[in-house]
Image 1: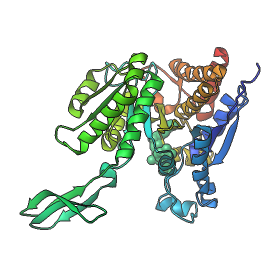
Image 2 (image 1 turned 90 degrees about the horizontal axis):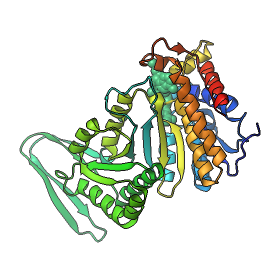
Image 3 (image 1 turned 180 degrees about the vertical axis):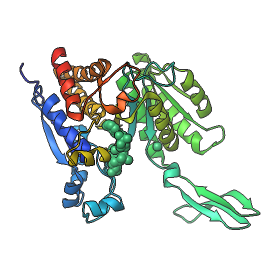
Image 4 (image 1 turned 30 degrees about the vertical axis):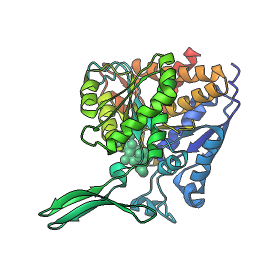
Length: 402
Ligand code: NAP
Ligand code: MG
């Protein structure tokens, strides 16, 4: 078979630990034999980030702006223990945070559903995608403990010195207080990313906040979404046969439980944090979850939703066998290749991505899987494979499909 040609390179962001091991296996077994793979390689492994004073992370994000599509391996976010382990010059920031700040986007996470790994909500038949706004609110809040009686106010001082005040509470005893903010620009790009992603994946979009209680803060989110929808997206949604609707978060939660799935649920930062954990565990596992950062300008960065699986890596280093699930990392590659295929009009590349995904699912459905899935599957007597043999089993299925 002749290898599939590419035109524009993918931005390849290599990473750390067990996922770095999987990364190489995936390329060697599942990609390089079939594709004339073109990538611009950035090594985001912690050692190289440290050597380059983290410049490599910035370069990789800027390359994503240049080429449009990136695929990222999981990376270590350094903490005190990692400072020592890797003898770091500095506690470098989270690469995901750096990349997100440069690309300014929204993270979409969707479960990868397969027969034999059943959601615990029995009427969920299709994936539910969570779109999480990744800026502000409680994550950028300032807080105070109020020791005793006194007055608390919000004070806005304009550039010309004029003040606007709003009473928060006239304390008569000790208490607590918190100040949150968000930016119209950030909410607007959140809205556009969600509308674009809905069109891209042909799914309805739900958005919910607590605007009945938060009449200015949450209501602004609702208004910005509505205004952008009416001005820029209404016709496009109608043409695509999909729907946008806003509802109160309480109503959304109740409806989600009764729904079939197959839609996108846009969430404010905190709601998205909490609800994505609920949705992903109800669907099965983080290793069966896709994750993509979509910028308002239409740049895409595909990754796995899980981390570097450190515990498995230490076993691997000791020469012990591991059974690490590579599906989410494979789907990061297929997502990026499919998008590259669409943008460069290379249908063979997109079809290859579809087949590789199908090969992953068929392999699991045939009972061959890694340990994490074997523990939760409804299939009887699954065959538990090690990391390498699972990827080899996927290759066998793929070769049958091609
Ligand atoms: P993790 O790597 O997601 O792993 C947590 C546990 O989940 C593992 O120990 C394993 O459980 C299970 N697991 C996760 N992915 C799996 C897979 N593909 N196959 C099988 N089991 C899987 O999270 P962590 O241990 O908290 O973090 C490790 C490192 O990853 C940290 O340095 C963190 O900074 C980084 N991280 C990076 C990203 C990212 O780049 N997007 C995201 C999160 C964390 P068992 O051990 O029970 O088998
Ligand atoms: Mg969370």
